[in-house]
Image (cartoon, rainbow, N blue to C red; front, side, top):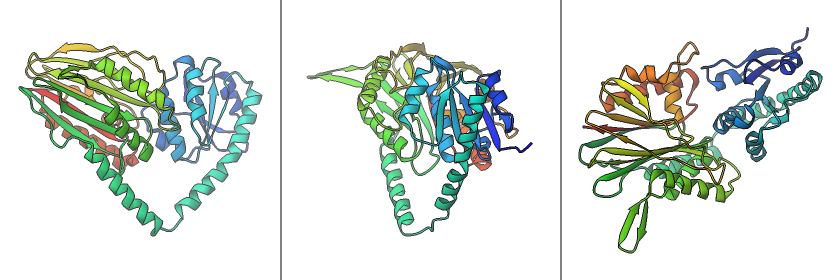
Length: 385
C-alpha cells in the first residue's frame, strides 16, 4: 500500500467511523493529549479536526488555527450541523484549511483528504522559499520596528505595583516573542480598593499585541459623574468590554479572555469575574482552590453575561491570576503527558509569591527549550500579609 502521508485526528473520541474509514491509505493517528500541537503538526500532511458541535470551544479552535498557520499541514474541519460557533470563527479566518460536513460518507471524506493532501506540497515549498530569503535590509528594519513595538507595549504595563494595607502584588510577564498577546494591569482605584487583571488575546504576534492595547484602554474600572465616582463591578466591566469588542467587528484576532478582580484592602474582600479565562487559584493553608465564575470568551456574543463572585480573604492567602501559556508550562511533562495544575501548585502552596513566580518561570524556560517559545506566559499573584 502506498501511504500518502501523515493524517492526524483532533477531536472527540471515539473517532467517527466515516473518518477512520476514509483514512485507509494514510498514516492515521489521533493527536496525543498533553503533547504540544506544534510538535505534532510539524511532520503532518493533514489534520482532520472535529469540533464539539454547538459547544465548540472558540479558544481551542483558534489555537488549532494558529498552529496550522505555523505549520505546512492542511486542516480539514469536519463540522456537525449545529457547529454555528465554529462556522462563525472559520468564516473570519484565512489559512490553509477546508471546511466540510462531518456527516459525509467515507468515500466523500476520502476524496476531500486526497484533494487537501494535494495542496500540502505547494504550501511546504512556499514556506521553504520564504525561509530562504536573505536577511538584512528590510528584515533589519522590521526587526527594529518590532523592538520599538515591544518597548511601546511594555510602556502600557504598570511601572510600579501598588502596595495598599496588607496587600502586595508580584508579577511574571514572559512574551513568546518581541510583542505579547498577554497583558496585565494592577492599579489603585481609590483609598482601599485595587483593581487587577490578566488578559490574553487569541492569536500571536502584532495583531494580538495591538488587541492588548485596545483592552488596556477599553476596560472601564470607574464611572465618574461630576465630583463623584463609582467603582464599576468586574462583571459589568467585562460586559462593557465585550460590547466594545463586538462593535469593532475586527477581521482578525477578534477574541480575548480576561480575569479581572477588585480587592478591598480594608475588609479583604475579593470580587472577581472572568471571561473565557482560566479560573484564578486561591492558595490557603497549603491547599489549592479554583475561584470559578461563569462567562464566555470576549468578542463573540454581544449579549454575553458575566457574573461576578466574591470571596473573603485572610492573612496568608495568595491568589494567582494567570494566562493559559503559564498553565500549559506548569502542566507540561517531557514525556508528553500533562500534570494536574492543582497538584503542581499544591507543592508550592506554602512558599512565597516570589518563589511561586520563579517556579512558573522555570517551567516556562523548560518548555521553551524543548519546543521553542510557542505562547506568552503571564501571572499575577495577590498576597495578603
